[in-house]
Length: 115
Length: 161
Image (cartoon, rainbow over all chains, first blue to last red; front, side, top):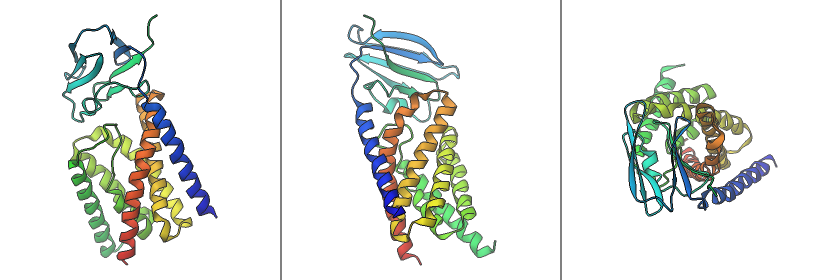
């Protein structure tokens, strides 16, 4: 009997997580992005109005991240950190999943649009 | 502890470490921090059902420390250690109630607890609740990976008496 309860609990957690994941992965409708390092906002862009460009952001430990804006999309194209997770995360899409570079404490995320 | 036992534990630790190192070579299709197949946990699940809790904890500790050194990513150690502690405590508790046929269930729950531990560590380290957004994704991928490793361990336990 307890086994069945455990199984039901596992199934319930799984289903709820699937629904939440779909919700979290939904693409954002916002256009404003900000680049944050160590809690301070370095840049704010309107993706639809910004021309294609590259920004090199040095970090406190001597490393860097290369951020690329192209065709209204933003991504980190290069970094000299060991794990490269920020590069592999690709283009910023979701409100809830910012592109994060943990070693360089850098975040690229959507912000509220200015009206 | 006698020498036979000690050798068995050392052997299991090295098997887990080898699996861990080989898995590093497999490209990860999910570019989300913290998502992994975790094949080395086949050994953990096997040990939970065949060895004493303290012995299993030893295997996992050795795997974690050497794994962090071998992967060249010691900053990940805090996250994986927090996950492993939660996972191990949960599985050791479940071992008492689950029969050998439902080892996979134990592994799935262990994987979920591992993810919860990981995210808690991330919340504490980064001092932001934003990372909780990753939890549902980790739970979905984690429980599928846990199901796979659990089934592998179950087949192993049946064959190796």
